[in-house]
Length: 149
Figure 1 (tube, helix red, strand yellow):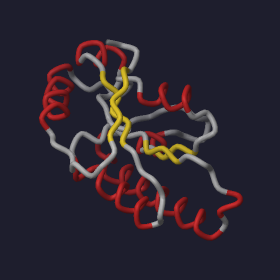
Figure 2 (cartoon, one colour):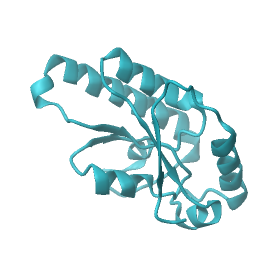
Figure 3 (spheres, one colour):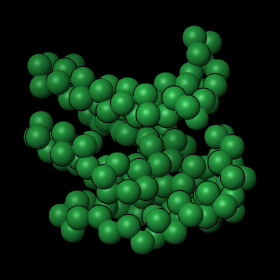
Figure 4 (tube, helix red, strand yellow):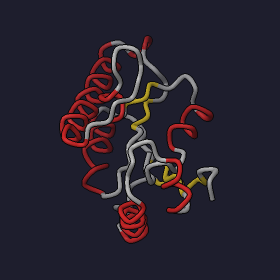
């Protein structure tokens, strides 16, 4: 998935693929009670954990396809192609179809809904980057409305 913080990526995933296994850097910040405790200084670790979890799921699917989820979703902002590339390449390497769901949303509305406290100016810069970043033409990309536009 790809989109601004607060665009509705997680909501879209839950509505459209309720049985999917979801990998997200945000999961790193959930405590034992499921309370979200974001810590900006740990974001690199969170993304490393997300990628590792995705790779482990793909490896387990390869080992036992009968007991694997049909859909695996990576629920991160994924603004730049380099952020998406490891996930896309891993999925393809394991022989899976891969698609990028770009959840569109107005920057101001996304800002008002994001749970990370990302300042509006940063969300607007992220929005500019989302609009200008060219993804490889051979990647499958589907653009959906995030329900906040």
